[in-house]
Image (tube, rainbow, N blue to C red; front, side, top):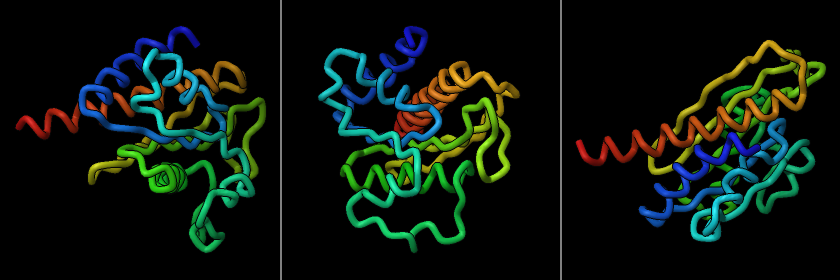
Length: 168
């Protein structure tokens, strides 16, 4: 996880400077996105909350979350990652939401996605961005780390793009 810290520090510095917050919803990254953000001293200034919402049952346990919200959606898609990011952001009243959903391995998920497949999303301030990563590997631990790194990288890029847009 140590290699995730530089990205987390970059994100933390931006969030602290802007007095913004984040909430995270992860599945196959297993909490590593949240762990990296929380490893930075002063995380309480920007990290509202996070969850490893590994199953639909866990997601439905969130306040005011109903099955109807997920109609037409399936896990392991960019749409699902966006939905998770939006939901966690709203439930935690955070400035930003980060979502991740995929299949760490060694096998694929029940939707037919191969191991090493994940979708990532960031929502906030009128911005929504999603991306898909496929490592091509069944190595569960390596995939979890790769998923977390990709989620942090996407978040850092969105934060930096938002700042550049504001300055333009």
